[in-house]
Amino acid sequence: MALLDLVFVQKKRTDEVVQVMVEIYGQDKVVANTKEMVALSIWFCTFHNTLIGSIRFVSHGAGRYYENGKVQREGLFYIGYEMINSKVLTPNYTEYPQKSYIYHSLATLRPFFDRKAMVYVDACKAGEDTDLLKALSRVFGGIPVVGWDADIEYSSYPNLKMKEYASGNMMVCVGNLCLYDPTPTRR
Image (tube, rainbow, N blue to C red; front, side):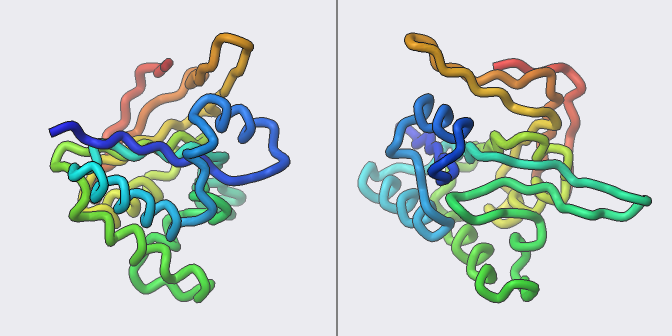
């Protein structure tokens, strides 16, 4: 059985980098929010009578930021317009009640993943925050989640569309365990 490789691009109208992401991956990969992403994933699985082999989230991102030894900002990426960090990926999130559905929406995808599935967070420096990658892995039932600790650069030329990991190191998290690959990664 062929597995689905799904790609979802952040939705942002006026951003040149996001426009290049859309050129590379296609307009049909842009989603507005988590609910739309989950609904499309389930629809694709049902329509094609198969499971998810991989999901790739393509968006802006940021690593965890410290000041005076304290975390000032969590690592993050976007699903559509929604900012995703480790806090919103907990089942009892209450800081912003309007975002409490994100965990439960994403968790509904658990039965749709193949046992060898992977999730990729293609967002700058999101791999610096292992709590973010571990939380996403747990939401999806222990699926490996990959992030990078460097900026991800996108290029678009008339006949060449590509992305490149500028010299980042890969972090892979499964449940509560993370493995760091110090080898510079290029794609």
